[in-house]
Image (cartoon, rainbow, N blue to C red; front, side, top):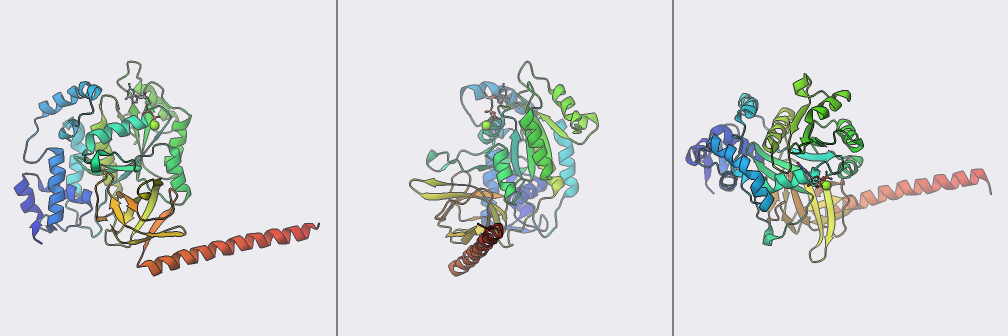
Length: 407
Ligand code: GDP
Ligand code: MG
């Protein structure tokens, strides 16, 4: 097992040290400085990420990027060609500048607990373009490497951006968000509120904003459909101001990004803002801590059995681990990442699909690991007995009440 120093690798691959640290942060790998060594496996991952970005050793001319961005709509209209990701942060370098400065000021990170990728949820009124926006991001930012070419719906996906990894919860709508929150779990770090530029604020937009505020999750407003001739982004901003949400350009602190899920305009910028917001939130998680996660969704597959998407929040999951969810436990028989690739372990902010539970767990249920099967059984038994005690007490109260009321 050979190890490589970060700066040596950066030099070999022709990328900046800072970029290398960002990738490591995105992967949740801890380091002390650029002279720290990293594992061979990590090196492979880094190479893969750089290859996907197409930045490895090449200088992307700004003109080329702009040309490609302009060409995108025509391409997108005919076939979902994955060409946009090759044009990363350089697009609109004016807008990117503050982000880069902030990143430089914060580095090099020396904290013991490594950064983790942000988990983002998308909410907004029906038909304002939530699904389209997620589809656009997925098409351009997720390498097409599904197992056997089958796109499996797992409820979450990871996007590789020029600023690191971003995890999107792929079940748009308030329901996913609220059910998960109702069970006491907060899975999203950032909420994107999608508002159609031709429709402005609608009832579900207000609801979505209220949910994000209640969860104390930072919001980014994506004004969508700016490609439409009747688009009126200024009206959206004015309407937001009436809710006491003041856009930055009006002197407030609300980040508002005009986008089009159709042409891809503004999407790169939206991703930049997500990364910047995540950076300010200073999201960290310890891959060496005890495992903790949340069920995103569960379903039964005719062939494979119960498939459960779990978001790893703390610690690291391994194939073979025993997990407890509510009153069920299971052993991880197999694990996939959100691209359908088989993986053996997964660190913080990684959505994984697990095979190993016999019952379908509910969205939002917390998942913990147990040392072994015996320990898992004990946790389940104690939860069952707690629940029975509560139920018995309830029955007893009702009886007493009935007796008091008489026949
Ligand atoms: P959701 O209900 O919020 O998930 O909205 P959808 O993604 O299903 O989009 C609703 C409709 O708006 C669909 O017909 C989309 O094609 C269309 N749409 C979404 N985004 C855009 C956009 O940026 N520009 C235009 N012109 N149409 C869009
Ligand atoms: Mg939708």
